[in-house]
Image (cartoon, rainbow, N blue to C red):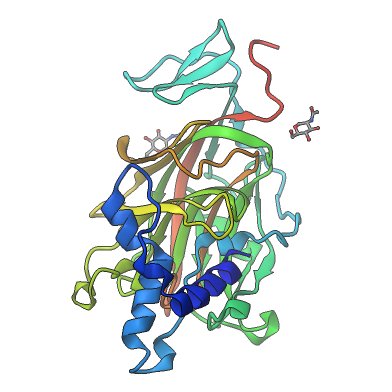
Length: 356
Ligand SMILES: *[C@@H]1O[C@H](CO)[C@@H](O)[C@H](O)[C@H]1NC(C)=O
Ligand SMILES: *[C@@H]1O[C@H](CO)[C@@H](O)[C@H](O)[C@H]1NC(C)=O
């Protein structure tokens, strides 16, 4: 699991002084990635604070720790159908909008190529639309030194009539009957064979401190690209340049996890919207050659290293394990990541080109 790897890397890196050598980087933003690699950041924090108190030592985990290979395939899908797979042309609403090409039976996404499938998810009614399921499993974060485990529970995934809510409850948390795991929320696409995609999520983030919101492609910890948001402004990963940046605006993290274990991820932060409680569009384009991360249609980062190359699923989650290096928390009030809708253009490993 990634968190074990992170801890092992951290320990060995601290011992060997490995962090004094430059970290590999994407071409998007050398300095930021160099400085803001969470393992580096965490290592520096540990070095600074260890003479003060060992309690400030924590491990860096990431949203992907919610998606270990032990993830069971159980589902709480309620079987309602509100999603649709489009097979008919739709007029472009503006330049830059994807267009359907009847010649090839594919959707053309500007800059990202052609995709055989389109799916839209809305959440006006109870239950999850066909094509998504809620996770139910425990993630054993404490093995890597986090204060708590977290547990994805279907009861934290529900529609309020407009938005899909992914809730980390602020009370009774963590509970003995779930092994003191922090109750968390996750949805996953039933399509687990996605190979390249353009996925747009219109969502509202929580301002209650103490969770990680994740939007990501995932097969395993070495085949993953993420947009992540840490709702506690004082998470060490939100304040990694200097101690004095405590309380600075919360950034978005954009990552391609390391394809090869033991090598650095490709990741950097970028500005989050100033009003995360309004709906914004968070988008990942994933092609054979690059990942590109967009906020409200504006390119934020483009990476050409650590590009996932195997098929998997798309995941949205909200979780906490008490780790001040990353999610912090648990929140003391309900923390809800609210998804208005999701539009996915994608290919699967089974799609052949053309109209067949
Ligand atoms: C999704 O939400 C966005 C932002 O509110 C809105 O513009 C768009 O029409 C919605 N799409 C669907 C399919 O409901
Ligand atoms: C679809 O693709 C997967 C992954 O490449 C493969 O294992 C599977 O056999 C394919 N299924 C069909 C029906 O072609």
